[in-house]
Image (cartoon, one colour):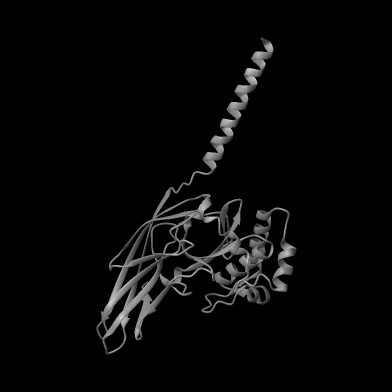
Length: 296
């Protein structure tokens, strides 16, 4: 009887332990977005000529459909649009104008409703392409000897410690130069020790990739609350991949795996991802003589 009771007690303990493990494993995989945020922005499209322009168009980014810290719930615009979602979840709005009269102006207002998260959610469907973010690409010269040498010097036993060390190095290595119109890239930032948020992003990304950590470049805005965006608000940062999650790193502002619900991603940047923006960072205009500006 005593042996039977003992085995019964052990069986109960094993069942409870297994149940607890499954419960906490399930809880760790729950995707949760708890911070609502509304983002507004607008553009002015103008025919600068004295002739009628046909089949003009404007392509603009909207917030990324879903990341580990962001879910775009709704998009509204003052003019009709077509929505394109590429393989990384980037969302592009296409506004078409059959005709634009001479010197005509069109104003487009866009409102997006988001849910953000103060933790990094695990999204299995978006983790299948992390290996593509190990390769060198334009402005991310992770295969250059200078970059490889510095990366190996910063490499530690644990990947997350390596990423943090790279973040701290980039934050202290690059002198903020103010806005630079043309992107210079990681090698420039490493050797010249200067750049803006883009060079911080590029160098962090290149050093991570050179140590074998998948890392992707991000473009968007830092929004602590509901916000009307202005052109000068645009910002670049990075996300590195660790244990099934994309984790935030912003060496220019010295933010590492924190304040995730302040960052609104408008673009996951990749040379291999094809969409109608054709490499443009924020918007693209179609039609000779048509200009566009993002309003303040």
